[in-house]
Image (cartoon, rainbow, N blue to C red; front, side, top):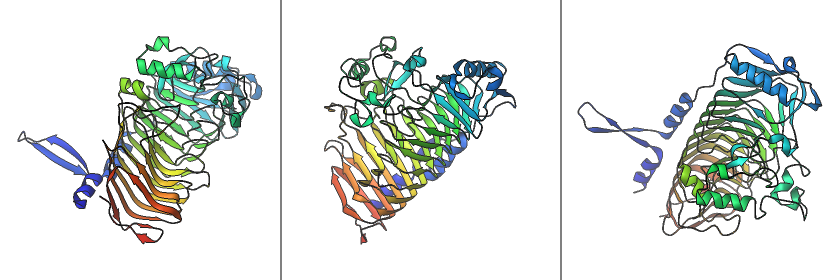
Amino acid sequence: MYKKIFLVLVMFVFVVSCNEKKDKIVTISPWDKMQQIIDSAAEPTFPDKTFNILDFGAVPNGIESNTEAFKKAINECTNNGGGIVLIPSGKYLTGPIHLENNVNLHLEEGSEILFSTNPADYYPLVHTSYEGTELMNYSPLIYAYKKNNIAVTGKGILNGQASNEFWWPWCGKDSYGWKPGMGQQKDSLNLPVLMDMGENNTPLNERVFGENHFLRPSFFQPFECTNVMIEGVKIINAPFWVMHPIKCVNVIVDGVTVESHGPNNDGCDPEYSKNVIIKNCTFNTGDDCIAIKSGRNGDGRRVAIKSENIVVQNCKMIDGHGGVVMGSEISAGVKNVFVENCVMDSPNLDRAIRIKSNSKRGGLVENIFVRNIEVGQVKEAVLKINMFYGIYGVQEGGYIPEVRNIYLENITVKNGGKFGILANGYKELPIQNITLKNVKIEKVEKPYSLENVNNINFTDTYINGKLMTNIN
């Protein structure tokens, strides 16, 4: 029985037609599948033309606004077939930057883009998303809508300038600067209204927010784009989610450093996206380091695009709620996630691998493969699967989430916190097929806590020095 389960976990099955008009089953390993994904996501390329923003009136003093200079340089670049929009050393204050086709926004070492803290600068409102629900809201700080072949590269700094004075208080928590009498996202006419609109399939042109609704903009958001890359830059002090490719195909996130400890400061949130490579990055965040998403509740089911073929390689996770996370907005589902060769270590990192949903969100999460991970310290659990995730009040409905085929191999954990595995599923749809192979977890209070989980398979796995045996 266990051998059959193991084979299900470690092989993808494809059906192809033969000349004899019969179906033939072809199997490949998940890691071969991962390599196919990597090979299919080629880096965008750009003509050898440079458009220096200084030539378009930019002033690198950190005081005068350069919004128009960025806009002129980007338009000139795309109108001439594309190339590099160069940001030389210096500090450049600006409002939102909107990328166009075939533009590589390149930050030289020593450059820093300072984004305005005035919400009025983020008008006109654009088609965007907030916590898994689409709306018209403030422009993300760097935004691209239905563009192809775009990039943000270099060794400079992108500074959102968010703080307990600007943007962060809108979350409504006094620890981030909110005080009684101040507006915040949970006020009755703000986020609760948006969530109702998502549930009721309200047309997008009626989901108009912006001023006085206190919904913060994402930092870098390519929306319905193809062939996207962000490489090398450092991102600090984000208002909200840091990197948020939504409805994108072929995305590369390479060598980016995120240092942002504000509320909802997820490091990278691929949503409704396919073929996403996140590699060589460092995440030091106020929320999940990487959180793979696919829409909230009714809006996610309306869009109905899975996030799939997500690869995470050679990354470092420091502070955060989770190292690599699926959820909680995963109503359209997540499949084929590959994580390898990462280091996760901080007293402020809650979990290593995390899956979260509830019966209001639903969603199917399947085929999650993790190998060669070094965990120094986590607070709560090495692997946490919570199908009763609660936030914003009662989160119960008729969409029971499903999780199946989770595979961890070659994992070493020095200090695992409270649990090696903490998994809580539904009796109606238990969590299916968790395999740990060559996993060593030290210093946990309990090896596992399980509810409604079927088929946990241990091979050469030790928790607190004890060889683990399979659980039906």
